[in-house]
Image (cartoon, rainbow, N blue to C red; front, side, top):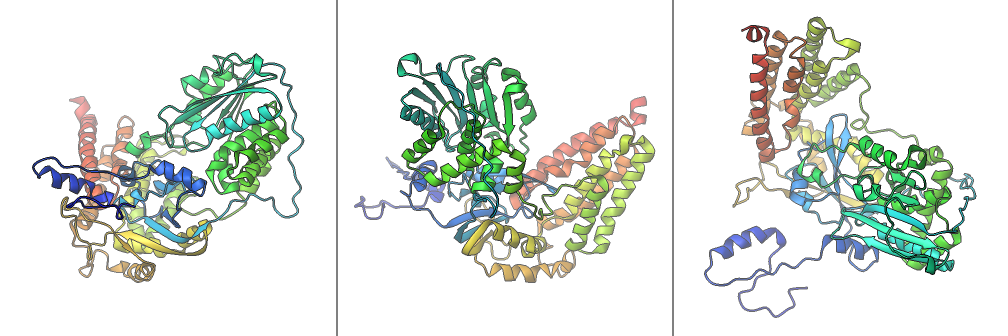
Length: 593
């Protein structure tokens, strides 16, 4: 696009990755210089792609959650909310929301070997069709009469079709000869920003005197996003005498997650706020995002699913034919939206059956199946460490954990079978022992679980490319001195299989990777942790156990690879020093003094 223009002599065209270098270069030049940054907005690209008006690269990013450390550097580099948290047995990891991904690919800059690009092929479709032989089960929907002005508030996040829902409801009312107004409150919202659509319909246009749903005047709230629906603006429109509220219980991360890898959303508190405003009998929470994605293969179906659910409940005083005709007139993904609407109706009729159809019995990846008790948690890590290195290595882990459990039982008499210190040591001693060196990354990639994950997501001909920074072939960034990632083709899987078999060289004189400062630090951390645990057990009592658990959990914050891990390690060690100082001051002898 830019190369064909007649630029002035001396003008250069550089990729956006060079922006910082260009700025540094130009600041040294005297006189006036100009930088023209040309790039189509990623969100605009996504909108155009949905309309088939912009090239859609056949390239998607996938994260191997077993390799991921949950450090959040990918979020820092991309500032993208399509990189979402994934809770697993081995801690919080990252996953890519394929439905909202803009294909910006900036997350690949995160210094982490867990990123893979799938090139070619397509995402597998959802389970949109009913199984063969299954009967239609969306019963005839009850229809409420429209004998007065009716206010609908649609809440959600940018880029997910909130405004489209408002337009379709208004068009359906228009097709029936009724009055309708729409007021979209999007402000500066872009992708994932809060969006509201005020829709008012009445038997005739003359009965509508305002376009905004007033305080306590919402007859229906379609809460397509829990966070936005629980905000003060949306809550103010609810009324326990007239409002029906349908809320998508599937939580989307907020912008706080980009800055804070440990971000948690108190979903139950937000739900309580909504119930308080509208009354428990008037509110329904449905995992619409999860169901719509499983059934339709794309989270964009969520809001239309919600409209179908509310319609089937009799909360939308319009005819089905009018709504379906409005979807058709909208002219975008007509069949897709009709199916999403129908699945919402089915869910309102028999939610448990739809949930079974959306997620049939299947083998859950071991990393995502959470342990049910402490014994299972320990046993799974013993098994993992045996595969990681050998039985002797796993036995070293098991002995220390059992030693902690015995001491905690004797010194504190753990109530109700709860051993918080033992659980902390079981989790974080394992984390330190299972450090992800080159052998382990290779083992985790060559494991069949990752291949099954990719096969479950994609169909057609595709190939994998890996984004790594191997120390032997790596060239550091000339400006920062930090390692840079490179792209490796499908042949890397063969290399992974060979490297994984060399794991027994780990820590021996023949370990070609073991002499690096990072690997030496990882081995040193294991011994330091064992010494710290010994000190905790020696002075453990009921008063300082909570502090001991905090100290034992410090490795939770040691995350990432390379320079990212070094930064987190420095921060974690500072925290550990402060906690140990407090623990030593809490000893019985210190308290007595």
